[in-house]
Structure formats: C-alpha cells, structure tokens
Length: 134
Image 1 (cartoon, rainbow, N blue to C red):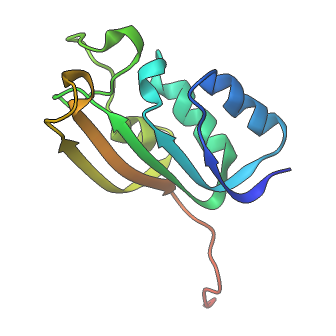
Image 2: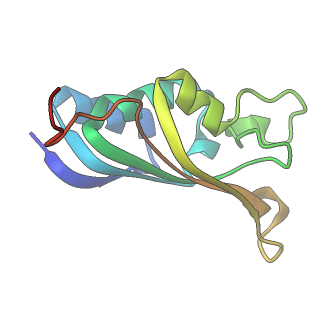
C-alpha cells in the first residue's frame, strides 16, 4: 500500500490508473494534476477518483487549461460553447475545499493552452492534530 507520497497523475489511461491506485489501497499526501483534464469527458469521475486516493490531510495541486469563460478544457469539447462546471465548482461539489486558485493566461502558448488555472484543494475537514480538547 502506498502512503504518504506524492502521486503524479499519468497522462495515459488516467481514470484506469487512479482506480488501480485506489484498489491497491494507496493514500497520497500530494496529488499532482498537470494538464490532465483535456483527455477527460467529465470532471465528476476524475475528481471523485482523486478524492479516493487523497490522504485525510493531503493536498491536490492542479495546473489545468481552461477556456476563457473558466470552464475546463475537456476532451473534444475544447471550444464548445456549453461548458460544464469549472474545476473549482467540480472540486467543491465533491466535498473538497479549494484554498488557492489563480486563473492565468500565457500569450506565448498556442490558443488551445493559453488560459489555465492553478489551484490547491484538500478535504473539506482535515483531521485534527494536537488540538486542545474542551
């Protein structure tokens, strides 16, 4: 069982890899998601899979491309006008707490990757540590 380590979400077979980590009982302190959402058709399943392997006091760090309206870049819907929830909304809907979020744009990148979001999230209620009782 993997525990207390950093997990970088793989680019190929993303959901299958996350399911394998969960099946093996993995629990990670830090999960890195770097440009993984473009290969997905829905955020809901991806965020749920991340949450399953996140340690109780762990962090999810994401750098993901977005559309100018803030919607994530997902699969073939890259330039679709009807977008789903943005990453922050998807994380919150899964019961995660987003502590930091920055939307950025880099003009030197191709239009497809120009707008992106950098964020950190954790479980909504991390475990208490050495907190005085009473």
